[in-house]
Length: 517
Image (cartoon, one colour):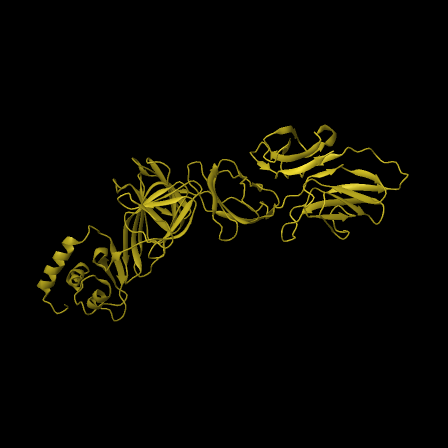
């Protein structure tokens, strides 16, 4: 082919060019030592017939002799290309897919999804797609997006990817390609975001406007109908694009929230996740994954207060990602916090008197729950349990523990799980043991739950005749988890404690049997 007359080559190029898609983008290739237009065409072009036109476009005198370091401009349509497809790398919750004709498609990591496929995510769901060039698209909850242009350039590893985001949010990480920049665009009903290697997000909550936030690199945001209405948005900035007015002036993204004060270990479910607000934060976008490093998405939502009280499925490690949303609706970079939930098995309810005084040296421990439960009882001379007696493992609702000497002692109880490991301990109780002829203060036996480290907490005890709590015989709310036994109905009952406060926190301790005499 390289020995064809120039006029014949021109005729072939004319024919091929007429069939090429309308695409004016060019690749700026930096010439290396030993390159010629012919060797370049053999490697990268779909036809050597483009050589004469490439020579003319770049004003090259000799196609066999190129200057190393010089740049030649190559239209993307001339480069070797093939249809591309995306794969599912990660997903959680409700995810669906359908082809261009609206036919449902199977959703799984073994599938490949090409041009025209539409994806949709449900509430508290997510989908992460990986494209041929390694770039990724992550759809947030309640989002809908269609794969439109899907082209791969095999000789360079580059790709041309275009996505239509109908609604919701999408985060993108576009892999930089030094040889031939990737071309990546996300379209919304109100704007087009174009990048060549960067990390950014696009959100289309409605058809009238969309938000673009740049975390790394730089993007261009334009109005598709009015191309002159465009702005370049650098890292750390974002823009709100209006369908009619185009993208606004870039503004700084809000800083990530400070999550350092959040607990590393929580013995309460929901965990108490509260952080300090900042001047520019009007809301916070939260994502919670777990349990474990490979845990699924549990929650994806926006809150108006700097607090989050998610009900978690069980013990384990969880990851919270939070980012602030400004007054204008732009979201900044994520802050991440990992914490461990160690809330189960929950401690038993205690049948005891607060600050009790007894004659003799016998500590009587009475618990709620069945006789078959296994508990660990710790007794100590000090309230911090730094000087403990050997712990006692008990299998009954009542246990007598002989103390070595008189005086003030502290005790607490935890249930053991199937592996013999204790869950959270009950609140610490104290007892003063005296001689047999000493006077002792009167004390009222009470039903005791555990306190939550929660401002303004209110505790509601409910007692019922059945474990389903359908026949509630007693209900009382107090500001301390302590109920006088003399005011409670007697007999074998089922107890449930609910914990609430004015900030929206709500927890329910597990239902358990209790014998009130």
